[in-house]
Length: 173
Image (cartoon, rainbow, N blue to C red; front, side, top):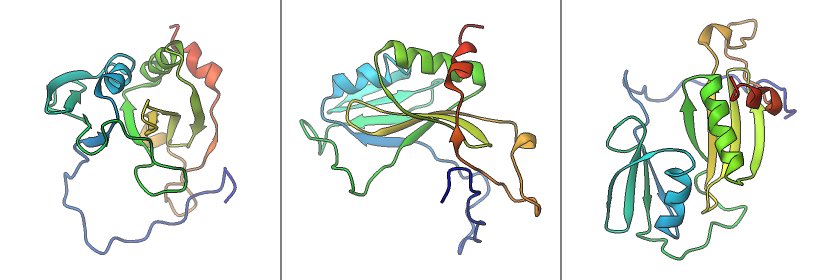
C-alpha cells in the first residue's frame, strides 16, 4: 500500500467493546531494569511509582502505572529477532505539539536515534526503540475536527513524512 493511501474501511466488531473501555497499562519484558529505567524514567520522564521483585511501575500524573518494566522472564535476555511476533510499539500520547516537540528534543539530546517521523493526518508520530528493542511511539493527536475524512465521512488516515525540523522548532517556543 502506498504511504499516502487511506486505510481500508473499518469492519464492524463481532462483539462491542463496552463504553468507557480504555487501555490501562503495558508491561514490557526488559533485560536490565536499571538500563530500562534510564530510558523510561530519565529520558521520557515517567515517575517510578513502585519497584519490587525485578519490576518497576512507572506513571505519568500519579496513576498507579502506565508502563511496567519487568525482568521476570527476560533478565539478561536478548531483544526478539526481526520477523517474530510480539509488541510492535507502545505509544505515549502527548497533550499538544509543543510538549511532543520538547520530548523529542530530549530523546535526541540523550543520543537516542529515531526510526521514523510520520504525519498520519489524525496525528503526528515519532518512532524509536527503547534499550531492549521495544518499539516506542511518541505522538500527539490533532483535534478531531481536523481529522481527514473520505467522501462518506470515514476517517482517512495516511502516512506521510513529518517535517521534523518544524516540529523541533516548537520545542524552542
